[in-house]
Length: 84
Image 1: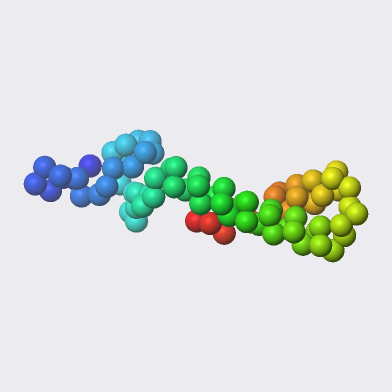
Image 2: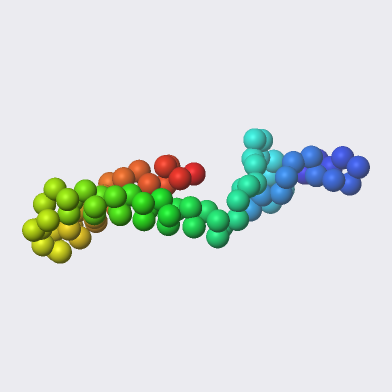
């Protein structure tokens, strides 16, 4: 670990070995709670709009079919890359 005036030349990281220098490593700007809230809000928005579209197109669809469509959307949407 290179030190300049008693300080590390790179930010500390949570990876092993801790003294390894990770060039280009940046710490998160947001807290974990904030990231989870954004993620949950994004998923709720996608699933809510999907449910609204499904019930408008086919109002007689069974609850099981609606849940199957929501499950498909939840699993197949690239949700993580949309919110980070």
